[in-house]
Structures are given as structure tokens and as C-alpha cells.
Image (cartoon, rainbow, N blue to C red; front, top):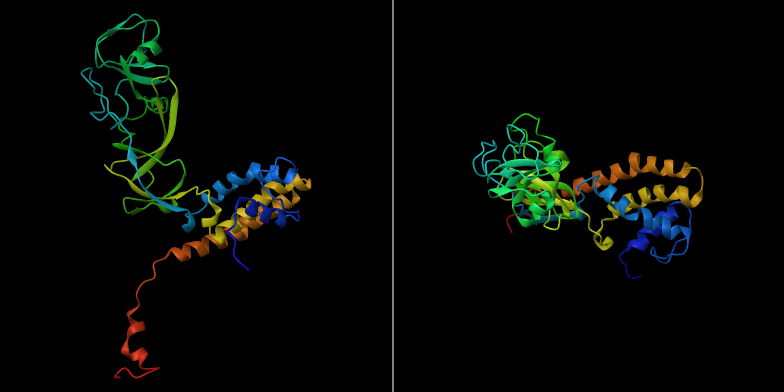
Length: 304
């Protein structure tokens, strides 16, 4: 019998079998309760299991693209571009933007919850958004960081930021340093959502890694959406957790089987899979005793 790699529908069918239900022909079938339940819970389940462990089958590597951030001193002194990424907030919060007010180049003002930098001497109109679009101002301080204005100077200390890939789940390694299980958070790096205001005033949001290193090569656990590369250990965990999520809707048992499956997933299936997967990641070290003449002479002569 020829082996056929599992697809998404096959994984969903394994979950249905866990709760004693008939299999389906296609998870994208718009008719029937089982396909709808599996479809609604499938990828959230994969993400949840993926984030639970640095799975070997989900390991990826990428050299990250550096985000363009202002880089100068961290204290605003009224001259030039004097607020930078280091420190990430001025020692004194800037004033609110006022209509029909002349601002010198290099002045910082707040508009909403963000801080903006005046690019040139300019008398503002009544509409700051029009001014921003015209290029007279540059946003250098997002609404997230604005909450740190009253914080201690230097709290936000990272010099560089890098856009994380869309499939990012967990960081395993940064520039050769082990970052699994949360190692290095706060000392080596931090991860934030970075928001950028575009020229059309739309906002783009990406997950970003912040650190003090001028380059970032990472190994990470990613959301690989091709089940053919998933390890059976990972699939087994996905199947049981997915079954726990769909059982109540399909069986209508008030959550009884869901609770049983969830307990099995947490107490048995996931820990066993994680332990086995972690063991397979260990390096196989060379043992010189296995090549010694003494041991080989037990079974055969070593002199020819």
C-alpha cells in the first residue's frame, strides 16, 4: 500500500474519529456541521499547538529586514532631530499641536497619542492630517510608545528593530544565541507590535523584534501550513486538541467529552510529544570508546 501524505481534511478526519464521528470528504464542504466545525477551529488549533513548543518540523530560519527608525540622541533639546530610538521618549513631553501656529524645524509636537517631528519651519493649517500628508511632519513616535512618556528615561533602550515574518510563532535563536523557552527576553531582545502610518493615513502593523545588534539572523518556530511536513507527534497533538474544540458543537453533550479530551491533551499527549521531539533535537556526540581497539577486540582481532 502506497503512503499518502496527510492533508488538512485528513487531519480533521482524525479528530472526528476521536469523537466517534464519520469522516468528511472535504473540510471546505459548505454543507454539514462537521466540516464547518473543523474549519472554524482548525488553524487556531494549529497555532496553539505550534506555540506550545519549539517543534522540529516547524523550524525555519530567516535573516530579518531592519526597520527604518530615527537614530540620534534620546533627549529633545530643541535643535534638529534630537529624539532617536535610544531611550525612545523625550525628557519633557512635547506640547500638543495647535492650529495656525508657527513651528520651527526640529520641533516635536503631539497629535492624538503620537509624537511628530517638524521637518521645516511651517505655519500649520487647521488640519494636521493634511499637513502630515503634505510632508511637513514625520511621525517618529507611535501611540504604543507614547504611553512611556512619563516613564523613567532610558526604559526603552533598543537601538535596532527588525520585522518578523508573518508566520512567526516562537523565537528559537538570535544570531547564534539560544532563545528557546523565553531565554534572553528583556536582556537580549523584546518583541512588540510596530505600527507605521502610511501616506494615505492607513496603518500597517507588523510584529517586530527589537535588540541592540546591527543584524538579526533568527531560527524560529513558524506556522507552516503544509501538513505533509508535519511530524506525527505534532499531528497527534493537533488531532486531540482539535477534537476537544469541535466535540461540543457536534455531540451536544454539554462539554463532557471536550473536557476529557482537553485533560488528555494537557496531561498526556502534549507532554509526551514535546519530550520526544526535544530528545530528537539533541546533538549526537561522538563517543571515542565505541572506536577503541579494546572494545572491537571483544568480537574480532584488531591486528588483521
